[in-house]
Image 1 (tube, rainbow, N blue to C red):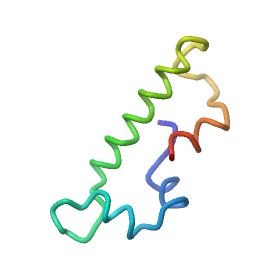
Image 2: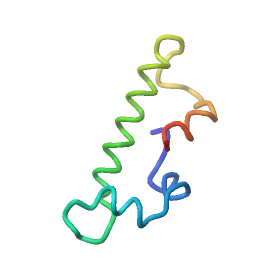
Image 3: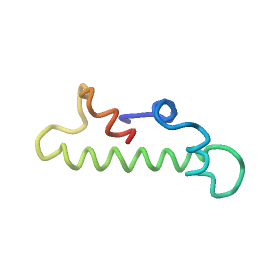
Image 4: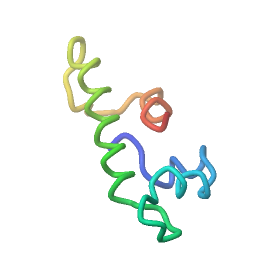
Length: 70
């Protein structure tokens, strides 16, 4: 994983994350949807980087986390 839910919460208010993920009106973050979005971001990043680098990274470059959060 290149980022976590906590990393996302540092950039996006929790209320917004709830609005984006809570399709069942439970009033809380749907962590499964966040995990799926993170997995998708990892796949996209790995897809681009694999043409030039060995994936998975042994040491994750610092630029990867903010890209994954975005």
